[in-house]
Image 1 (spheres, rainbow, N blue to C red):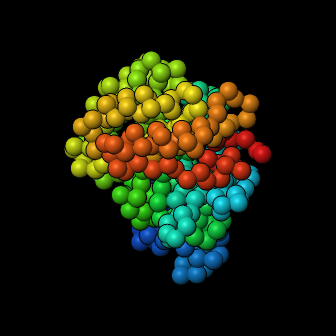
Image 2: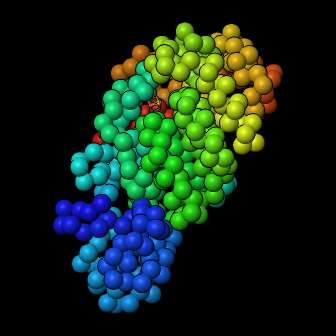
Image 3: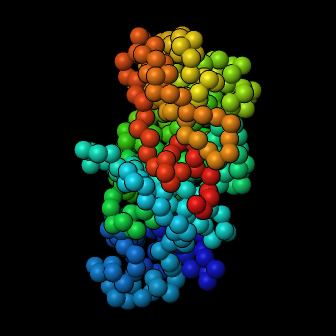
Amino acid sequence: MTNAENKKVLSGLSLAELEEFIVNNGEPAFRAKQLQNWLCKKHANTFESMNNLSKNFRSKLEDIAIISDTKIKQKLVSNDGTIKYLLEYPDGNVVETVLMSFDKRPNLTACVSTQVGCPVGCTFCATGKRGFIRNLKAREIVDQVLTIQRDLNISVTNLVYMGQGEPLLNYDETVKSINILNSELEIGIRRITVSTSGIVPKIYQLTEMNRQLVLALSLHAPDHELRKKLMPIEEKYPVEDVIKAMKHYAEKTGRRVTIEYTLIDGVNDSTEHAEKVNKLLKGLKYNINLIPYNPVCGDKFKKPSMERINRFKSVLEKVERKVTVRLERGTDIAAACGQLAGQIL
Ligand code: SF4
């Protein structure tokens, strides 16, 4: 990938891609490793600052390459410290990437997008309402994380693939980005979560990789009829088949899966719904996150009362103790789950 001036864009490339570029430009391969270190670990914003590279090499890089072509179009900081970035690619498309830190833990979690818009069209989701525009390349996904690192001079420790888009519908680029983020940024594979709406064949394909990723399922409804109304993907991949695939993943990898369940007032939050969730998930090793619905401007859904949330939770706890109500982060800047829609606020 080159920019308008025909310069190579380096941030987000794999080491092999960087090596190929370096060697093709008459430099020894080991320079790629040094360069990657500056790009991925030292958050360098300029070639000039890469002071263990020779002056000649640095000035050559200025002529043939640029660090990144991802622009920060907007940056919003929430009262709770969550930061939402609106990032723009050279074709004018924008995605959101969110950085969250959790009190008392040194973790810095980046929530990345894998597509511009999303083809799945969940009725309660701001991204779904926007429609699908295009898949992101692995380099573009990786550069979301590197852009944050350069901007704040920090190192991201955890990743969640829960921003805009369905990662498993952009499978190859998603997996390639995971490999780069794991090997070049050294983000532990067990600290990476991929969230899916339930693309059954791709769950099986991901299982075959046999890596220690956390797989999260956006469940949101315990039966076919209700799920169909909230998530059109249910027509293609019925929930019973999805749970079968999730069981296969948990058994093969030995990892507990995560279930995400957005609680919408009067829609999917009754005790009967909770009983049905228990029945549906029987035999699966899971943690479950309850996400009180975050209102999206002008929609018909509402967040349940604390009383309803707690009642739902206590029914789930009868069979599984690992039930958490997810902390709402960044709601004041529309960075919470289901609120990412690529808008300037
Ligand atoms: S909830 Fe996820 S899968 Fe559904 S439309 Fe939104 S981004 Fe796509």
